[in-house]
Every structure is written in structure tokens, then in C-alpha cells.
Length: 313
Length: 196
Image 1 (spheres, each protein chain N blue to C red):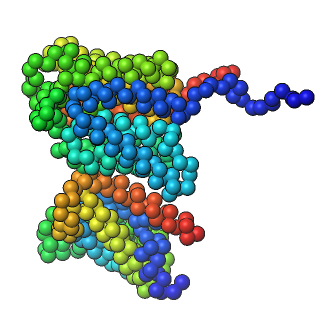
Image 2: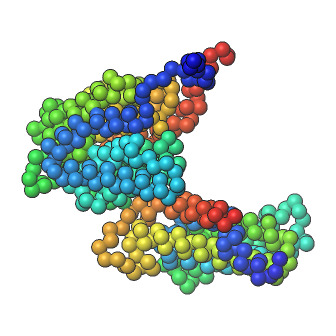
Image 3: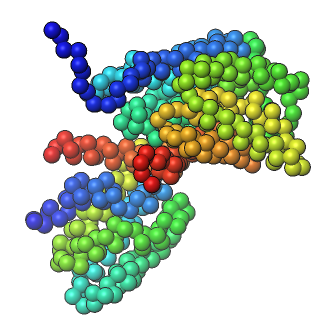
């Protein structure tokens, strides 16, 4: 008779979720924003994205070979890094730029720390900031949407920084992404569809995105205009990389706090930093720097928001 | 230990930058170009040799309790000589290195060798130790600044190497210095582990 009694240690309750499954769902949730980017900026957006993904996965593969560890290219995490990096680039960059950025993201942002689960910072943002510091002229020239001969145009936030106002830009245009910007950040509608998938599946919690967006809105509402409490908070939510950053990059499992309380602090911190950089900083957009800075603060947040162990004081 | 080993240990086995990890402040700050690196390296080597010699000579007279101020006075003397010479003979280099030349006074390599070596060893050994450490520091600076100048400006010693190479600006910035030093330290540790 077969013995059906299984004796094993905890955990006893299992879920069918795995790293690969979650990561590929995240990839899927990014597809709408990618399609929107290609529709808005043309096929060059597709090439930039594909090259970034290819370079990220190849780097992951090479590092796996060099360090003689398990090859982790199939778990989808490198694919996400590639996609997120490409989503943070203008569509008209020279095609070597996403490749260099993706190699840097994976090599310096992730693998030197020991691979998935060890990275201190979000790898895609590390790549973006590296490209931003190295080749600012490519990273700050944006094409006008739906233009065939690549007319350059400023992003709404850059225009705001220079004190100009882009004409005929309604909130609906901002929501649908009909303005200059990075590939994946412009179409809020598509991003929200992707975010909804992740929220419904329970892969991300509401804590970081909601506090992040709310803090940025509140802060820009209070200080965004010449008089207090008159800022255009909706404009600040809908423009730049806030939605992309809040739902897809500030919710990175590895580099963000573990507890709900810590995530609230993380979200508020990101929101404050983003608003401060946007309103008074040197750059028009601060989402990437805000998230990276809070990534750096994550170990401290984790230390002070540890869950009380049941049965202890 | 043989005399020749006193000299060679500073080059690789006890390299001040990559193994002892001392003197990172000037290393990070001035390694933007190879010229700066060489200038800083020579100035520091001069100070190291001079202070090692004098500290070694007077090591029996310095009371233990006030040895650090004594070392500082000796080191500061040589730094002043180096600084005035640099101002006189190479004003451009002096401007490029700026505050980091007077700051050699508190360079931890110089003070470290005085405290750890020169105050316990005789003149010849101290001289060779200072020379070795100085050359090791210079080599490390040249290596780091060559990488940074090539990547950050596309040049070596002011000569463009590859046409059409778009400089990676970040390597000319402080963050680039930290990146290069971090990766080189990793490489050194990797090589050391493999040998052991």
C-alpha cells in the first residue's frame, strides 16, 4: 500500500505562481503601452524596444555563462528590464543607444549585485539614468507624435520648465498620449489597462502607486503655481513618466520595501521627490531619479517598518 | 624581506589604491584625464619619498604621544614644496588639480606609510617603501584616468583615438569615477581570489 502521508516542513500552502509566471504577466501588461507607443511614434519605437529586449536578454545570458550560474533568461525578468528601459527612451534615438543602455542595465544594474533578487536599484532606471548622463542630447530630443519626417517637439513638462505652454493640448490629448515623450510613458490609457491587469492578479499592491501619484498631485497642487493651492495637478499626473513609473517601476519587487507600511513611506517619498525635481529641479522630469533615490533608502525603510513577529512585544 | 621586495610590494601586492584602498579621495577627484593622473601621482610620490625618509630619520626622537602632528608637519613641508614647484613649472596642471594638491597633506597613503612603515624601519627600506607605494599609486591613477579619459572624452592624453566614437559623458563625472574604481576593485579581487 502506498503511504499517502507526506511529512514536510512549512510552507504547506502553495500557489501556482512562480517568478517566471509573474514576470511574463508583467510583460503582457506592458504590451498595450508598447502598442500605443508604436501607433503614436511609428515603427522606430518597435525597433528600439526589440533591440533593448534583445540586448538585455543576451547580457543576462552571457553573465550566466561567465559566472557559471543557472541561465535565467527564460524567467522574463531581463525582458521586463529591456522593455522598461526602451519605454523610457525617445523613439528617435540612434539604435545603438538602447543596446548600450540595456547592457548597462543588466550588467551594472543587476548582475554585479548577484542577479535577480539582489539588485539595490531598479535596473531599467539605472540604464536610463546612465544614458541620460552620458548622451543627454539624444535623451532629450523627442519627435512629434504621428509625424512622418520626425519633427522634434518638446515634452509637455519640458515646455512647462521653459515657461512655454503647448497650445491645443487638452487633458484628453495627454491621457491618450498625443504629445512628445518617451515611447512607453505617453499613453496613460494603455498604461492603466496594463496596471489593472497587475492589480487584479494581485501582482502589485495599491500602496506604492496610489501614495506616489497622490503625493505628487497634492504637492504640485499646492506649490505648482505662483500662488499656493493653484497648481495644475491633473497635468502633472498625466504628463511625464509618472504613471509608468508609479505602476511598473516603483513596484519592482526587489528594490522596494517589503511591508505595506514601508511601501506607503516609499510612495510618499517618491511623490515628494518627483514633485520637487519637477517644480524646482534642473530637469523637467524627476520620476527616474525619485524612484532610484527611494530604492537607495529601501533598506532603511525596511529596517524601521519590520512586521511585529506574532507573540513578541 | 629583501630590499627589492620593499619596492615591488607597493606595485601590485599591496597596491595603495586597489589593495589597501587608501587615498580614494584624490583618486576619484583628479582621475579625469591621464595628464592629471600623472601629475597627481608624481606629486604624491615625491611627498611619500620625502616624508618616509624624514620620518624614518627622526623616528627615534619623536615622542609617541605627539607623533601624528609631527608627521603632519613633515608631510606638509614636502607638500608645500611640491605645490610651489607645480605652480612655478606647470601652472595649467596646478589649476587642473586645484585643491587636491594641498590636500595631499591628509592623503591617507602618505600618513599611512609614515605611521605603519617609516616609523619602524630604517632609511633605505623606508625610501624604497615610499617609492614603491608612490609608483603603485601613480600606476593606479594612470590606469583609472586612462579608462575615464578614453570613455568620457574619447581621448588619451588629449589625442582622439577612434573617430566617430561618441564619448560616454558619465565617465567624466564623479559617478563615473566611482563606477570605474568599483569595477577595477572587483577585477583585482577576482584575480587575487583565483590565484589563491
